[in-house]
Length: 312
Image (tube, rainbow, N blue to C red; front, side, top):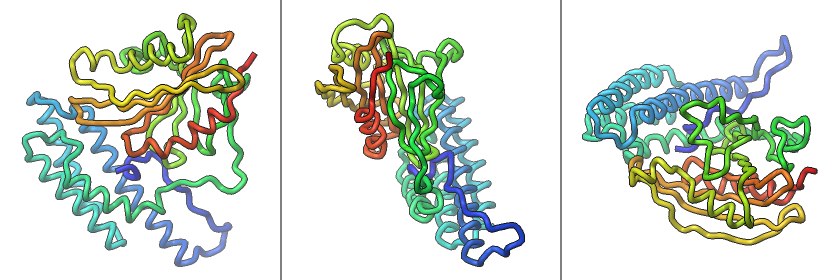
């Protein structure tokens, strides 16, 4: 369901003022608009189900999930009636039917429901071209980390075109702060790949107290991943693999691991690298939405490794 969860869509070319749009351009614009409407509605449903608590057994959460599903089914059927693309219309109708069916299931928060996934897959195939952004030829990469960049860091590296960075102040996050801490590390920057058509996040973490080798930093980082879920017995980490390497002329290490959240029945795959600098230890991590998206984030991760330099 990767395309359906995107928050940005491919922009369409505009015609010069006063020039009539061609029929093909008009059809493309209509298809993009219809795909955007369909995917935005589905994204809202997923957000509502997550808020209700996927895998939760509380009656209150189930009631909220059932309402979100029935509301979506009603809205989606109304949208389907306006869709001009027969394949997209069929996909939206299937998704509406699947949502209504899930609303009557024992666990209406099940995000891995096969009917929902199948219907979403049909829409994904129809809308893949319309909703996959691409950078125009010549779009420059962004150098992240140097003075004046969106995040000033102990290291600098290049970003894939369209990836959008922003600084993070954990102290301002309130109850969400724990999501941006791993062991002795805190996130100071996050880079959103959704404008480039990918799902997940790249985050840069730093620690002034971390000591020891880059591998030791990564071991502490992985051990600090999702502590609350671990304490509740809902979180497992599998297939941890460490590798020693050199980045920016400095000793470094990287790790890949596969987390599994039992409560959400959700698996992913993360990669991170670490190195020490005069301003403390640094960890750069990619965390895709799901395990299948890991390969899509790797080019940006490898670019960061290849282009990394340590700031003075």
